[in-house]
Image 1 (cartoon, rainbow, N blue to C red):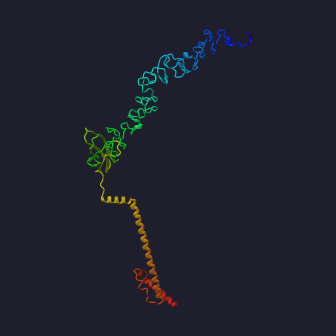
Image 2: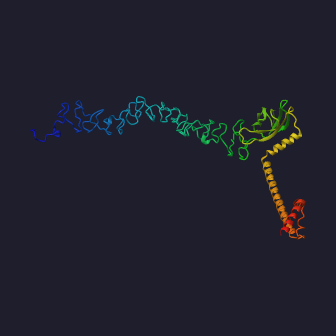
Image 3: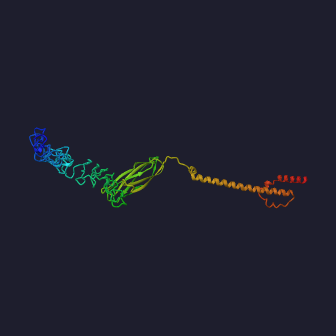
Length: 435
C-alpha cells in the first residue's frame, strides 16, 4: 500500500525493520518468531521476558532466566543448582552453595556442603561433626555453644574451664572444676561447698583448706585437741650452755583425720633449736602424739614461751601452754644487800609517781615553815609592844602594871637585860630632871 496508510505490524508490516534476520513477533514480546534469527523467540506464542537461557519465555522472578530453566523460580539471585542440593550456584546470591559440585545439606554459615550429623553445620566447620547437639564454640574453650547440647557452655561468650556443676565452660580461677559463681571458695581448689555457711569447707580430706569437721553445725568447724607439756618450767645456767629441752603431748578424741601444727612463740632472749612440728592424726596414728622441743637461753631472767597447737588455717588454736625458762649466770659477781637497797632506792627515785609525790611533800613542808615563821613573828611583835608600854608606864610613875601578868614569856629576859634596864632608868631620870 502507498505510504500514509495504516500499514503496521498487526497488518503484516516488518516488526524488525533494522534486523534482516527477524520480521514477525507474534506475541509482541520483542523477540522475533524466527528461532534461527537474532534473539529468536523460544516461546513465540507466549509473551515472555527471559533473556539468559532462552529468549521470550516466561520469567517469574525477573532474573533473566526462563521459568522453564530456573531452579529458583521465586528467587531472583539464584537460578542454577548444578548439584541439585537446593542451594544456588551464584556465589553472590542468597544462600550460595559453598560446594556447588558436591551435594550437601549444611545451612549454618556454610551452605550446600556435606553435613554428616545433620545439625546444619558443614563438616568442614563443625567442631563436633558426629554430634548433632553441638557444632560451634565461639569462645574456644572446648564447650559447645549449645547450652542444652553435649557439654554445653553455660558461658558461651566467655572462656572458661569449669566442668562440674551446672556452669560448665565458665571461669574457674582455682581449677577445681567448679565455676567461680558456684564455688564457695573460688580461690581454694580443695574446697567448693560450705553447707552451713561458716567459712569452712565440707571437704574433710586431710590437707584440704579449712576442712569443716562439723559441716552442718555453723558453731563448730576446726579440729579439737588438748596439749600438755612436761616439764612446764626449767632452770638453766647461761654460763654453762643455757640449753634446755622438754616434751609436749597432743591428745584428741576426733575420729576424722586432721593435721595439727605445734609451735612455740619465743623471745629474743631464747634461741629455738626445735620450735615447730606438723602432726597428722589418722586412724593409723591413733589419738595421741608426743613431740619434743629444745632451745637455749642467752640472757638471764624468767623467759616465757607460748606453745600453741592449731589446725592449719584455723583462726584460733586448739590449746595453748606456757613454758617458763629461768636463766641465771653463775659467773656474775654477787651484789650486797646494801647495794641492792641502794639500787632499789635509786630505781624508786627514778619513778615518775614517786618524784611527783616527793615534790608535793617538799611544797607542803615549805608552806608549813612559812606559816610557823609568820606566827613566831606575830608573837614577837606583840611581846615587843607590851614591853614598850610597860616601860612608858614606869617612866610615868605607874608601878603596878596590868601588863606584868601578860609579859611572862621565855623571850622577855632577852629584851629586858640589866644593861638595857639601867639605860632605861637613867634616861627616865634625866627626863624628870629636865622637867
